[in-house]
Amino acid sequence: MFRNTVTIEWSRNGLKLNASSSLRHKIRRREMTPAAHKIAPVSDNLVQSLQRIVGSGNVSQAMAVREQHGKDESYHPCAPPQVVAFAESVEQVSGVTKLCNEHRVPLIPFGSGTGLEGGINAIKGGVCLDVMKMDKVIAVHPEDFDCQVECGVTRKTLNNYLRDTGLWFPIDPGADASLCGMCSTSASGTNAVRYGTMRENVLNMEVVLADGRIIHTAGEDRRTKKTSAGYNLTNLFVGSEGTLGIITKATLRLHGIPETSVSAVCSFENIQSAVDTTVQVLQCGIPMARIEFLDEVSVDACNKYANMDMKVAPSLFLEFSGSPKSLEENAEIVGDLVKLNGGSDFRWATDVDERNRLWKTRHDILYACMALRPGCKPYSTDVCVPMSNLPKVVVESKKYIDEAGVIGAYILGHVGDGNFHILFIMDHTNEKEVQTVLDISRRVGLLAQELDGTCTGEHGIGLGKRELLLKEIGETGIEVMQQLKQTLDPNGILNPGKVFF
Image 1 (cartoon, rainbow, N blue to C red):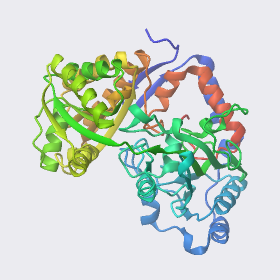
Image 2: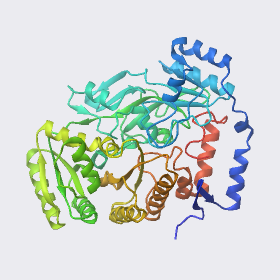
Image 3: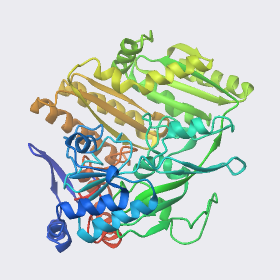
Image 4: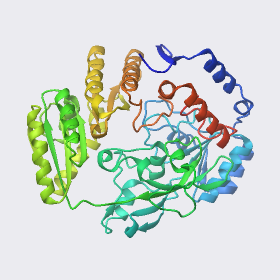
């Protein structure tokens, strides 16, 4: 049985909450709050005020620009803002935020637009604030292994900047996302098994609050590796998805580039064997840099898209890093575990170009899968569970897909930390197919929660998983989150409708 008293049902119109009568009353009461009804449309006077703050050339009401800023890479339909403003400084962000708060107009921060849960869709209209022009690497402190960047700097830009320092920022969600956007969603990726997620790699942030005030979550210019000074405001804003404040600057941990790295691919007869191998490798304490899983249909898509010749079978993509001697020892142990679980076709990639091609193939999986169903669009969901429960949730998810007869479903993920994804390529005009896909996603999320896991390991809640969040943290958890939202954003202008209703 599920632990919480809140239950969720699936209907033709989507997820339906069966909460206690007290929670339903509280939800209705919050929907009727004065602040919610005072959200106003964007007026000509407000547009003129925006132009005075950021410059007339940095404000656009063109439909093409609005549509570009009204949708991320998720399946959610485009919901364009009424106007788009481009900020070039934190003072401009503060001015725009204060203006929107005074007029009670929705404000949605926009970075690279690579999210997967509709986090930037302007479902209530309002102003979209694009911060990608704030793209300076402010400072790098190689001896302290940290740096400070503005919100428009992407992870690839930062790593290119760091190229001659011997350091890098390893959090890699696949897309070339903005670093402060990655803070906002608590992103992770292929290197999380060794380096953790954004939550473990952010030391401090500059955040603009709903009323225009600017705070530094760990104190201005503080960049220590640990602190016991007061509440952990940094982690409050990491993962807040733009609903509590707009992140304009981040101080990040850097890491030394490994002395040597080698990558490998190995295949298995079934999913269970591949996932069991992952668990055993980590139980042996082997310091893996990456462990990625692809099922057989994902491997087939990669082969066709990137002209690879990998065996079409459930496979693990592995990367080892360290000294040459340690690599040899660790690779030998992993090789024995692979053989123990019936794995075969162990193929090595030792030089840089070969390794880069291998991991580029993994990162291009979305485009590889889309190429197999031209005209269709992707829908991706992710969950995360304790490592001991990973084999069960992956195998059961595969059963859900097979039982539903879904064509174009691919299982892959960062199994080294218990996080995996299901990527569906579906016909969005086929209502029955869309409904089936969403039902599978819901079932997988509920299964992960039943197995002590979470409905999202890195995509975030956005629009797509608000109901599952209620199931996951319960009534009291939602109430506390709403109280925090009410305190920091009493007029409800910051990215309204996201994370929870």
